[in-house]
Image 1 (cartoon, rainbow over the protein chains, first blue to last red):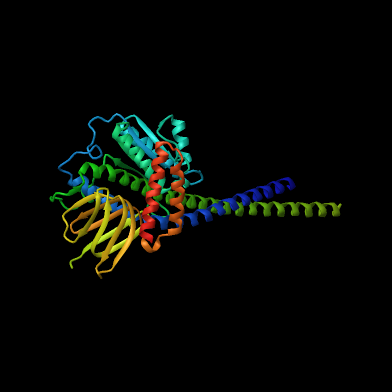
Image 2: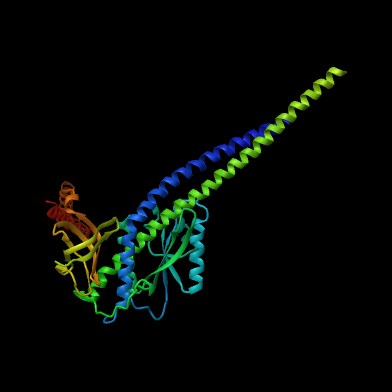
Length: 285
Length: 132
């Protein structure tokens, strides 16, 4: 009995220290998620205007051709920008992204290359042996809008050169604190949805100095805006996913501690009862 | 004077959202000034001063760098990479950035670094000019 009491006590201690860690991680994640949400709110108007304007232009495009708008006839290669986290312990956050990349690329059936953002994404690419275009954005927490700009210029240039024929960004949409949805968004060639370009744009748009020059300057800006928006969403999602995961881990730890304390008390009671029985039996004889 | 709806946004948030009489910006092709009832228009922005005249006739100045300007249905959207109102510009910081960039330019740099330093110098100069 004594041995099992000691064992239970040790278990309780270890569960307690684990709980301390999960609780601390939960608190850190909730303060980070608050800041990340503020950032989303700040960037949302930018993101939306950029997307609306681009959709309108792509939709109203009549009098010129641009390699950034025209869908390519033969798709030889598809590039994915995969935005995941640097660390695990965030529930299904990282694995959901990887699953989406897998199913998406399988559904399209083209050879792929990737730009991993975040350590987990880089590890995934390495494990799968994917062709990696650049791995300088390994740490997702350090990626700034400047980096997005840089990456956007680089990828637009590669796209124009024909290194790949479609560009997707795979990220996680921050729906609410409890729901985060992974999504794959086509960035290049620029697509439009009918809803975004509500009205039929029958008027001609004046481009200065020329449609091509404007597009060359504007498309990388658009791509970088999308990257930054996706990054903000993903970062908030990661923190929210971690918060939820750590919250349930702490709750589990609480349950375990309760359960173990009960067992410990029973064992202690059992030991005492046994001792009394022994003493009484000894006194009678 | 008739007005139009002007929206100025960057990745750092919204800088202007309301009625304006006119807006003057530097595009990659030179300065343009947009008034109300402009035809649909799209251009890319360069680096330079931006002047916004609100519906009350007051003009505000700002340093505006990169991005695009679009006019659709009497609605003007200015999506900038960076946008700072003149009163928010830290001139001493821009001066420091200018000196650093100039020092860099005196050294022999590779093409890419040279371009970066030149862009930095240009940005600093724009800020100084607007901020003063």
